[in-house]
Image (cartoon, rainbow, N blue to C red; front, side, top):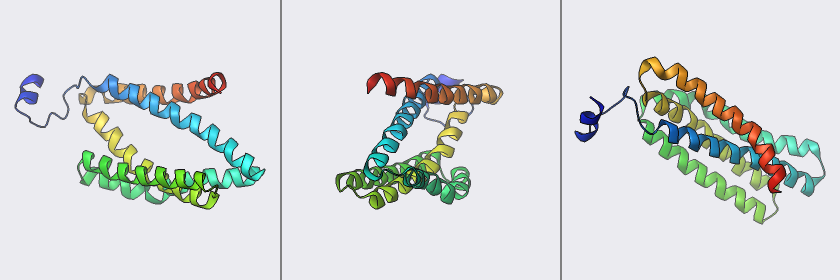
Length: 169
């Protein structure tokens, strides 16, 4: 049973975790924050350059970083431990965030774009492992229901971000 599994410190994959709701709430907060940041970022870049083209190019460096590493990341998420992938992704995320902050401090969009690309790599490293970890936290028969909840949480966060952005700024 689940409690015995936890007390003996065994691998409890496939047994329902009490942390699923907490994980979904965390994903909601993270996704809302990211979507607010995207709006702020686009306005910041436009104020610096006055060019929608440059806004689009820099905003897409995040996606370029994701595309470059996504397929190897999915393969690694199945070969390495989930927590190791999350740690590696967190290092990339910290470096990417630091480089972006440095780029902002220097008002240098090239540095900012490099940081954004590194942050995209972090996202591609973290997402497959996080989703797999989430799926491992419930019984197999509940995985599809959980994935539906996950995508509803993400879409709701995408809807909530503009509302928060409008009322907060």
